[in-house]
Length: 247
Image 1: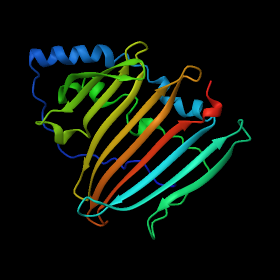
Image 2: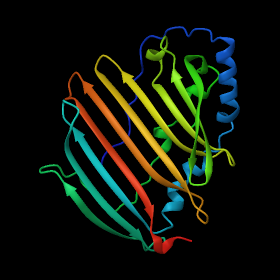
Image 3: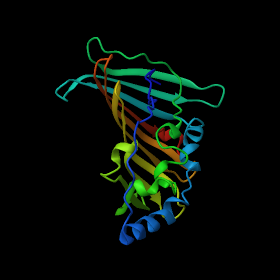
């Protein structure tokens, strides 16, 4: 995998405004969302990489750096084919393209993301104490292959958005199994010394013989600090099972 840190430095925000009391309609919407969100099965999501590493697959990793105008300035892509049994895994790394002078380190290590770094095991917007800081709405349903997905949006209230890190979350839930099949999270960390806006997207792909497998991950960060230069970058990972290994 690319030797690029995807972890976020969490900063404690000073000050906290008192959340407004939700209306009865808002409470009803939140209660309906909580029926689903409180009973999520995230085990397939948290163990997806372990199942992937038993198979042959291709991982495509793309890194993009953006200029001050927001346009892409540098890019790099590596494609790695993993195969073989546990203990005898092989990796074939191919650099598809790279901008001059921009070549992140690569190796043949298989990617394992700790998804709790991006969506906590017990996120604040699903806690009784934190839910009054958010609005909960049901978005239009989606599909993944022949599976039906429920989609919920969680948005920080304008009055309290400065007191919470997760500003928006979109969660995709398989209606049949209640599996958390994907998420789209936007976070903001702000302090006197450092500001960061980050968006994390992750999705699973169901299979007939191997359960839920990782399909894609994307991390986009915009950071600026008092003593460090501003950075704007995106890391994308896409996973495709080898046809020769499909059941």
